[in-house]
Image (tube, rainbow, N blue to C red; front, side, top):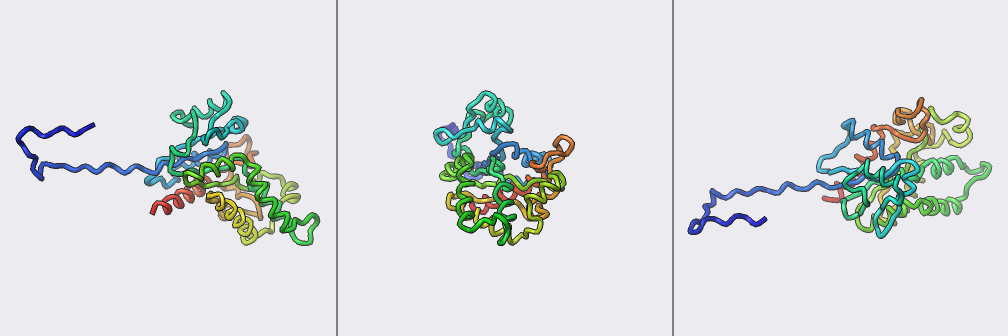
Length: 266
């Protein structure tokens, strides 16, 4: 709307002028994912997030509905009525589609890219052990793991236009996974240094796609390749949820991503 013109013949004095600075718009940031977005929502509800200068939104769908989210013409859309209903509950204002141009940055969390399916087998494969995975095999596994996740491929497309951070689903929750399974699959003696080698390889591969990895914080890891019970969700039926995390975990992930986003703006 144009400003009102001053009355004819009168020139406003300098003292009569008022200058109102337009409030700076916050950075618009979207958390996208499957049911793993719940840990960030819990963090929000519990007041654990550093949202200074951030306008936060969520977009995604749980369970089977998540499989009905597809990349079409550069946007993520729900391709079933059930998926669209989930989107309408999570973000009614943007239920039609998630467009990379609508936000200043994105966190893809969970999204069927599971740390336990990639890092844990590598950590358990030690030189001299039966079925040891050679470096040549390991080098083939990483791109297949990433390329095999179509939501990672969507993240790669989004990253062509906006900053994208990716947090794979964390290690399974200690105390809920059976000890038989732990003994069979987890190298409980694996060290942080051994995990860092693998995380660094993942980070480098994602960086080539202009995606920044948000690795599982070491403070949440126990027994080589499990998540500490203190970071497991408490909402599962009778404590049998070995996958999902709580608000404390979600805060560690999102605050790390937002810190990196702010650093990009400087």
